Amino acid sequence: MYEKYRSKNHKVNSLALALLESALKPGKIHNPAGFFVSAVKNGWQPNPQLGQQQRELELLKAWFPSAKKAGIAVASMRSEDGTIRILTPENTWIPLQQMVEQYPVP
Image 1 (cartoon, rainbow, N blue to C red):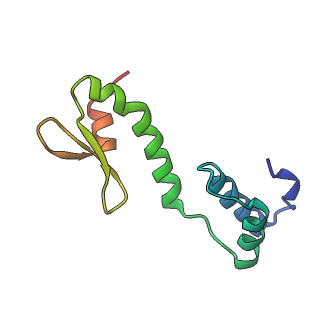
Image 2 (image 1 turned 60 degrees about the vertical axis):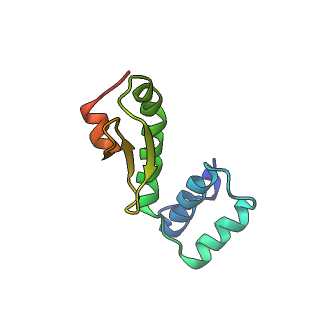
Image 3 (image 1 turned 120 degrees about the horizontal axis):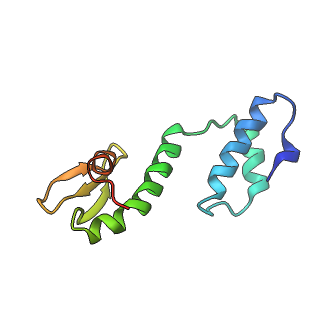
């Protein structure tokens, strides 16, 4: 999308563009150009945990409705350590990844 702003092997621009592209996905950026300029000027770095959390959220969206319908899951929440946990019918909170591995649902 913003490929015309990438310069040859320019790590700062690449990082700033990666930040901008990830921030635009949730739609929270009202001034993309200003965001990009600030990212370059201030040397912002991507938050690797944010990418993981986004992937985990997508997994939850795909898995949870079927799991709830099948009676495997009751609720979900994001814990203090940032992982998503699933409440089972036995009233136990289990990490999403573990639930998906144990109970793959279509």
